[in-house]
Image (cartoon, rainbow, N blue to C red; front, side, top):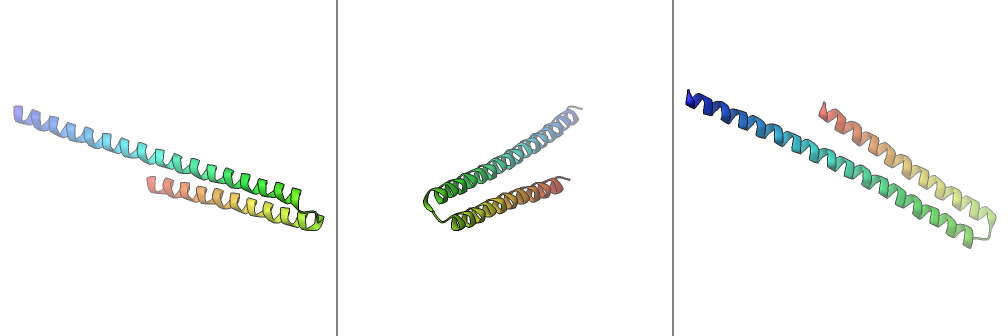
Length: 102
């Protein structure tokens, strides 16, 4: 009887350890995902700031209006493409993670 009791306690302890490990792994995975999302958002914000500063420099240094406007348009298009690419990549990554969880 005592051996069976110890065996049951051992099994419960193993089950508890496994559940604890799974919770810890899930928490770590979620934390890494959040860190990645934050990093991507920071990258997007920094890139946008750089491009806005570039537009400001174009405005203050280029005197030809046609060249200035064309340059600003190209910079804004680059900014839009970068934002769309990062957002699409984030969505695809998120969808991939949700698919693996199911």
